[in-house]
Image 1 (cartoon, rainbow, N blue to C red):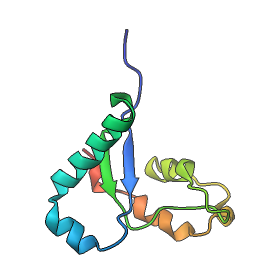
Image 2: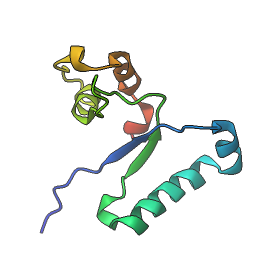
Image 3: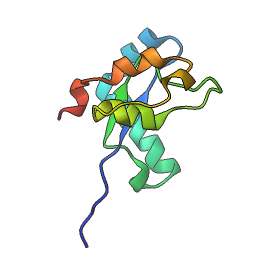
Length: 102
């Protein structure tokens, strides 16, 4: 049976004392820790292929995450209902991400 699933990417925003977190854990170690935590608490199927740190996550004015808008930006497709977003400028962060090219 052919696997037709698309590899997933996880975007994460690091809150708190970022410098302390990044100094105590190298980038690769932090990504491994995130993936291991997901694997231990769910299933291997839920582990994202890539974990990408980003400065902002788009939300609606009701504070719901907007995954479809991010997907549209990544695939260079138009994003409908930009006026429904609390922070539409955050979508600019997802354009042409180097981490998604590999």
